[in-house]
Length: 224
Image 1 (cartoon, one colour):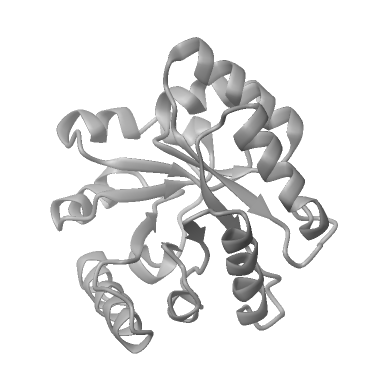
Image 2: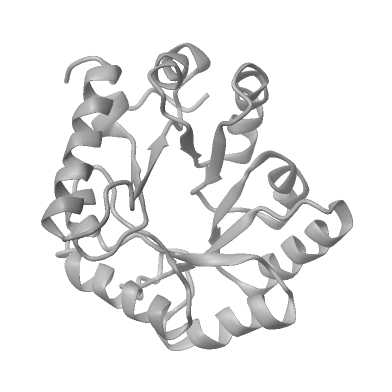
């Protein structure tokens, strides 16, 4: 692996090539640089290279580094891409611009209450467990239409799209195609799918957001 800047430029080029191959507009896909476990000193050069959208897995870890980064660069956008506990909802709503892991009714209600209270309305993606894996978070495919309606129409959450993490030992393509089908059926534009190993496939199948970490930053540090 080269430097994070070289890696970033390579990933950008690969996304652009995949957009072209898929007949999509240049810039149709947002790169979410996944900076979990990396400190400010590793993230800042990537910010300086022009990257503006980042993803974090843990609320507490993000709270320890992103206020400082955002103070210097106010136009940064921060996505929560890891599981959210209801006791962290208040902190998450105040810190993140997008919450990609809305996965159960209790969490959706807590988010709606907090957003109404604070007047902060971060975009939300609903996480779908496309592989129906018992150990993994996410709404089951059979429940997705009802859950979207509950979040969007009843709770008035700003639902921007859907997100998935396919099973690690399966071809991701059917999962990406299934997520795109669910999004289209529910009139949702956003599709967060694809990570370091498969983001080009995700772009070909309609991703609007790809979550790329190790292909940019290299091997993970221990959690902060």
